[in-house]
Length: 294
Image (cartoon, rainbow, N blue to C red; front, side, top):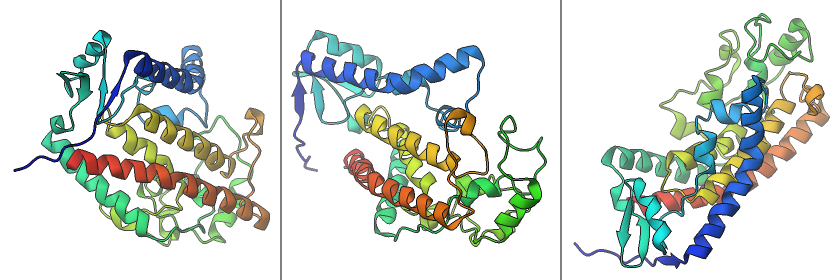
């Protein structure tokens, strides 16, 4: 079997140290406030989600990896050998895609198919963020996830808004948190198994999940790509919660009133912008999958 030669970029120590420092400086603007709040025992209904649901530790987010086909020169590059995926060669130290275990290769193959299907599937922009409303539909205040924060409507009014709307969530990891009375109202009934068939580019949570896919491929993922995906997920989370039934004005988040025509229009504008921002990130993740499977 002949091997395909892949061009490798050799980075001098000054160059890769600069990238390493720039990455850490960038992500600390997100990780430091989170860790400060955690030390004080404070919860944040918007930003905690990025570190709890997406279980990638702040220390891991700060850690820099160059990605495949980059060789780190200099004696200090040997510090990367503490990760079993790295190899030393004549030019320095680099990550070896061939070290990907078979069980992870199967996941990468699945992810490649998912990302490729999403690239060709039409985006849908008509859900208007009703998933958050369906998660509190006909619940008691004790059952509500963010019960430390008020809802913008009384339960009966909230229920009427949900019941008079077209609920059409395609994202399983949102749908699974719907209340039992809300699930039959959804036009789709997504499951874990149907995710590759239903996931689509217009979905806010599908674009947030680009961050999940990026860190699940670590340490093979260039850390700049992980940070780019985190930044998108953070911006989406803000809109997601502004469009929710929660009243978070005390935290500086003005509601997007999706119960009105103007609110629906504003939400869709954000949704389209996030879909556009997600396109190049999805393409970079897909290229990484192809490289790891080559």
